[in-house]
Amino acid sequence: MMIFLLIAVLIILVAILFMQLPAFGKTPGGKRLQRIRTSPQFHKNTFQNQSYTPALTGGATITGVMKDFFFGKHERKVPSMPVPSVKSNLKNSNPDEPTITWFGHSSYLLQINGRNILVDPVFSERTSPVQFAGTKAFPGSNIYNANDMPDIDVLLLTHDHYDHLDYNTVIALKDRISMIVTSLGVGSHLEKWGIPAEKIKELDWWESDEIMKDLRFTAAPGRHFSGRKFKRNQTLWSSFVLETGRYRLFLGGDSGYDTHFKEIGNRFGSFDLAILECGQYNTFWANIHMMPEETVQAAIDLHAKVLMPVHWAKFALATHPWDDSIKRAVKQANILHQPLLTPMIGQKVSLNRSPENEAWWEKIS
Image 1: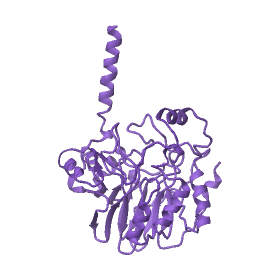
Image 2: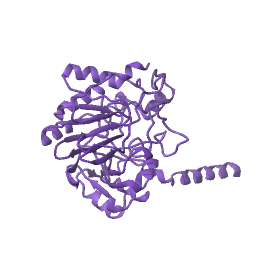
Image 3: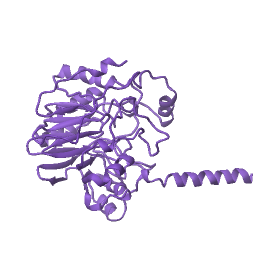
Image 4: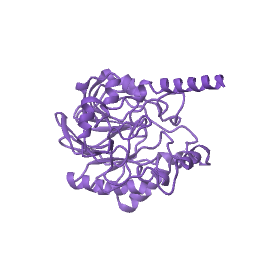
């Protein structure tokens, strides 16, 4: 009996020590928590969506979802060959030629007005607090690392999930970042990781800040959730509007479909480019991740001139075929006459030119 008791105590101690790993971050406290409590989005000690948003849908249960994810038979979740990609020189940019370079999933670099804006970079092999377990990047999809990045003027972090806020990437980049823009509360993780408070700008929904000349960020609603430990929704999740003087871009983060897209579109008029999630969906969690057809509709609601689907081609965080999202999005965009931008990973694309798309995913089974 004593042996079993000692084993139980040891397991508890290991679990406690494991949860102290820096990658888990830190729950907001002090003055940050005081500010959070004044947010219109914060009710009953947790952040809330605009609409009622149960995490599970379609009669799903946690047990059923886990069983299906780990033991269900799902074909082509991972591509059968390496994902094609391009290794571009990102440290030499033309300030007169605004570009976007996608790194797979929801990571991309905007180079506009001579500024480098890096969004939700994840250069680790796994979306996890540890690198010996967790969802692994597709072969060929993770060809960039922090050393490939130029000095970063603004690091934008939409929310604190591991596939958007990567501890190892932030640590590798932190000495080359001028300013971080993020959602309310997320700065608590960053300060724990050694980022000075004066480098962090947290925004609540509809708050704006001109971080640098001709770089104005506005946090806007999303329909999602947050959390790096067991307790959810202690930090906010957001989409962001970037206005550069010449361009207005929608940087979507993660979101289920809802009326907030129309609200944002009505407030801002139109967008030159909307970058929206398109992947990792399931009828089991339809409220917090859009279906591809909804992604196209969201772009239309935003009055987007061009839609760039992201949140795909790198990590299998759902059970659908790895290329199902882009195929469905292309089909729906053709029906609704919504222009698309679908670059390969690493391909530097000009924002000044009409999209020239290649269906590169069709070359992979």
